[in-house]
Image (cartoon, rainbow, N blue to C red):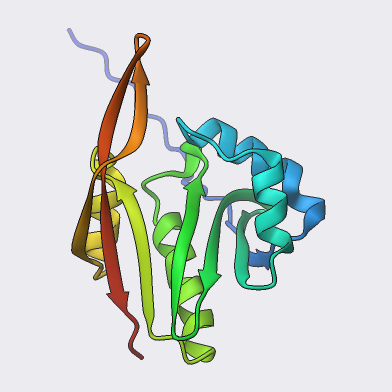
Length: 169
């Protein structure tokens, strides 16, 4: 005889509050910790601080329940912008937060009459390339052997892919 026990449980979900915030010097430590954890070649605190201080840059943090889980840094030019860095905490990847960061940046740029975004990504960063392609970015150029990738004491070079997105309403 097989005994089956059935229990009724109530499905519960916790509400998630997301928001965007301009990064200031007060958030550098939190952003640095996120960067160090999410990148093989992380920016330094000084690089992050300089980026936030630069008036030609837009720097936004993505907060989930008041905790920074992602950020994006873009440098403005006359009629375009370059995404310099984007990161999402490992526990929050593959949940649409990277897309949200880029969408938020796109809206901010569109309001400033900037219609083109450029970025560069390592050829081996397949997850990022997939994300960018899904958002409408297109590959426009290749930088051969642009990135250094150290492995077992050997200096290996990796190509950089330059991508472009035309922003529309």
